Amino acid sequence: CDPGTRVTIDGAARGGCPIRDLAVEPGPHDVRFVFEPTGESRGERVHAPSGAKITLRADFTGESPTVRVER
Image 1 (tube, helix red, strand yellow):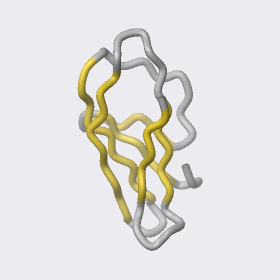
Image 2: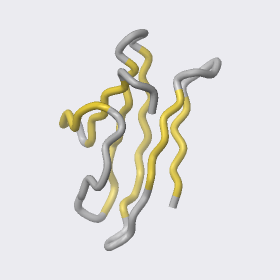
Image 3: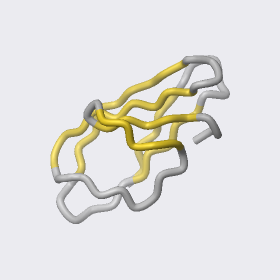
């Protein structure tokens, strides 16, 4: 994530990027990235498998914000 990007998961603030080793319950979650300098935001609904590790990457440098899920 770009510096200045804030993260919420299921509506709860989780801090600024990068966030590492954040544990969530297995199942679906609404993740939103907000780039505070411009107010742009992008959300994704992701499924967290039990015992698995996933990485989300937000990019606010292109024409429109994107979020990539890496498993």
